[in-house]
Length: 347
Image 1 (cartoon, rainbow, N blue to C red):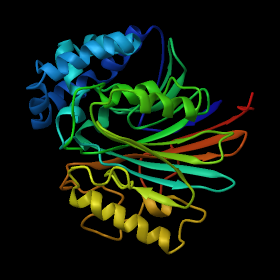
Image 2: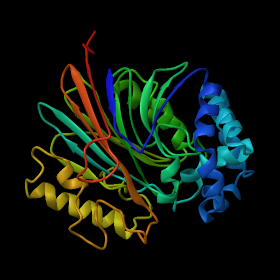
Image 3: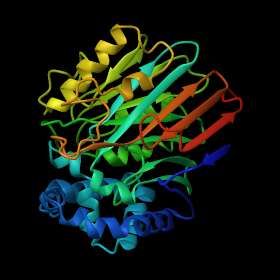
Image 4: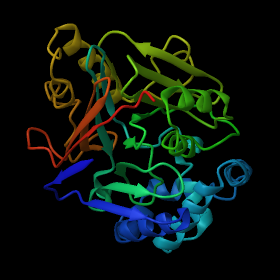
């Protein structure tokens, strides 16, 4: 794998034990977490639940079933110089608050060459601490976008089995006891195949909701997954599709959820563009669209109603024996990172 870099969004390469990986991630994000994150209402409202029985039970679940990620979280807390209980609660934020941030839009284009593309939308105040990380630890090596103070895996990423994923926030109001959704996404990065990831998500006790798109060389389709506390809906994408961070599958859309005006607008506008046939070749025509000026798909307004901006865009192009990716930190600019991997993934 080769990576070309020209970026203000840094590439951070980390090798070591799970605890050492967590420490390195924490140290990278420590300044912006102390300068910005822990001063926000969002942090305060989540940390108020740090001792809640559901969070205590979730800690026990993670320690029992995913001890390596438990160690990553301990290392993250050490690197951040914050109490473990607070850092763990923050990594459960979507499991206890339907208002959890990180909006995001994903475009899925089937065909001879699969395309999975994603806008990562989040708190612009965290931008200085965000990074593209390349991690080699006890599990599979992977790279992806990370937020300061958070486990990797709940944004966009690719592992060394060629498994590409993009994750959208779902603001479910029907959460319950179970494994934190961010830990489940971290577990996807250790899976070798799409099927293995789907089996893990279906069989897990889930606390809350996410949408995950999965693609891999050797697979002929893109899997669109909406999992909630009570359901896990999987469908193969057989026509161009957009997902703008609320439940839209037939098996989940009736669940109670919070759909913001931005989320609804981005979904409607994305479907409008796809219906017009504008994205037969280029998914960035959707992800960089600003036609709805008040609630655009590409978000850069300082007063965005959800408090989110587009922080990065990733485009994965997947053939039967290769995967290529470009990552951008702003629209209509040259990609910051390019990489390509060619190998047989069918053995």
